[in-house]
Length: 308
Image (cartoon, rainbow, N blue to C red; front, side, top):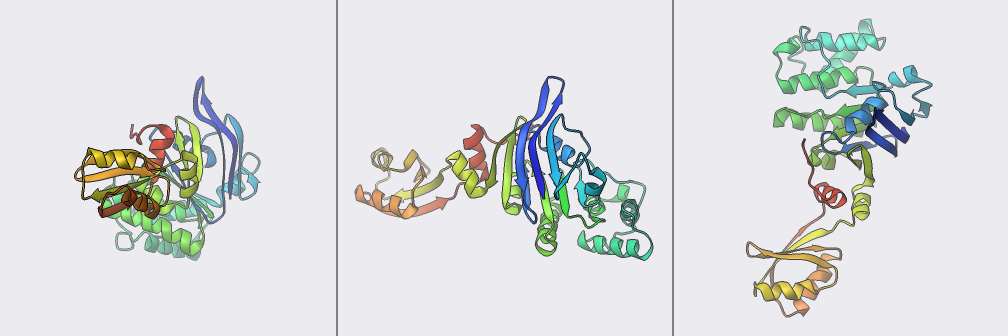
């Protein structure tokens, strides 16, 4: 559905996006993960024709964005970071306006407005002016406007910034439903690790304009050589126990804290536990934490995700 080759965007000497290449298959939810300033939004702006690339190519649904921009725009829905709505119009009238831009009119337009209001769960607030809506409701209308053409490629750029937990949950579930029930390909950018982890089969990690890694969670984990965490409680909880565990193959960064021994492991948990018992230690409790995107990002970049 989407292929980027050597995509680059420069502003003078500043490189906002640096030689990014990746593929997104049809029917995937693909996440762009990184802090503010990582290059996510600039990349999305180039994909959605808002910005022209300095270099590289973009192909969507087999078509060149440079050569066939109008045809591509017809199959794309874009939810920008900033609200793109008319505040003085109602939710219904905003949807009708954006639907008309895609050529909908008459009965077909009214039907689609009703369908989208149902999707974003705002049928009862259909006549409420956007200016009078809560932040979460505005975000939903913004999403609805991007769905009026029933897009094949749906792009959401930081759609949950600054909204309440209930609206955030609704947006995440809406994205998931559109993908599962309609097979819609979704590009989802965020600096919230848990959103990308919940929604996306694959993700790209960006920082300082560069693509650091891309793939499934397991592929990213392999790229980062990321380790899982094993936390054990032993009867003989002391520094000597820590020293014994430190010598077990596949174990690193062993620390003693809060009545537990924590360690990074790159072998099967059961095998590690057996090796701990062989040292003469008695295990009284075990807790396993699989490497998540937060820890993968940390191990790839050497820092936690910045929100700056």
